[in-house]
Length: 474
Image 1: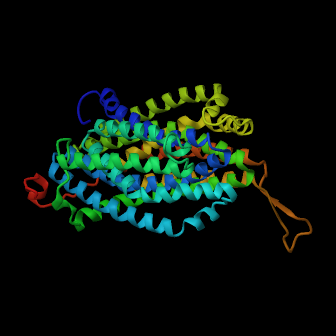
Image 2 (image 1 turned 90 degrees about the vertical axis):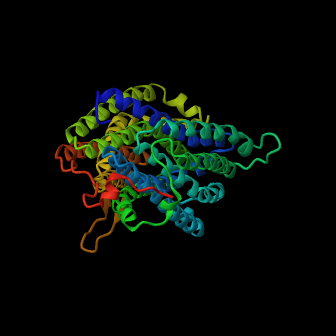
């Protein structure tokens, strides 16, 4: 990414990431498709749990954002050995964080569901699903560590092929364990979670084997699995804002889902399916953002910041053009898209409204994600975090709350009651979603154009052995 025409190189780096992310999205789409053959309550349960599952995935992405920044910049600077050391420390950190989240989540799983407003069959189905998802967290984190390590080194195809195989496994296993095909019992939502765990276990085992092999740009050494304070400090310093960034996004999704819950099963299901359709566009934009992070990181490591800026703008423009075309398709066929998942007329009608309100801003969502990727590649994860906080907690959640609900207050000094909010119903939540996407894009572009991200994050005070990469690991 440091020489030659930017467009073709960016496309070459991005397309395996796009396909890999779309295949990753297939996990969720396949689950929703087969769960839709069980009941509307099952769809609502998995829909309600999607933001919580995404919170865990966002944490993994946040941790490995530091890996992409450090590995790509070390590779750009010609220091492969230091890149390998970062990979080993990433594995240690990923295991520690995922184990803590899995244990903590399991202990408070009932309280989590109650807080999110799950009741009756929706509560039962959601509990069956999330219990298994907690068990799969270490596998999820390790796979993201593997993918980030190879991506920083410039290899995006290996992870793509691995996701292709594991997503195929998930699609094949789903109907057997969800609906009880053949000798298997019908496990419903729990079956969907077990299928996800099995496919992620396969991907993780193969991914770690690839890193141990070391022929794909970076190598995992056993000696690098001993905690290294210097590298760990770098990972945490760069990664914690990215982790908070993920939490800001996913916790806002949890809050938005809780806003939808009072409006009934149809609204919850329409929201869940709609968010999954949006996740296809996020997968494309997120993948291009990851490729942008690699391009920016390698160019900053090679001391070519102007080229890093050009990588960002080319990636942003191409992504927004693609998502604008996707918007046209979605708005032309909203009902057929929803009927792929469930043929309930009430849910389909609510879904049509969801698409009409939110699809027009898909391109802006995508543009923001690409610019955030550029900031992460530069190691400016705090800026990416700030953009997520603004998008969700300043522009989206308050607007949705004010538009959707109304509250009557009786002030002691007033003779009449005071009404806060517009109370237009669930469509107000959809409008809040759309406004947040548009406003965040404007802020992201202005922030990036200000500069201040061109310095990189590599240490200048490493020893000669560390900087030349001559050390021989065990």
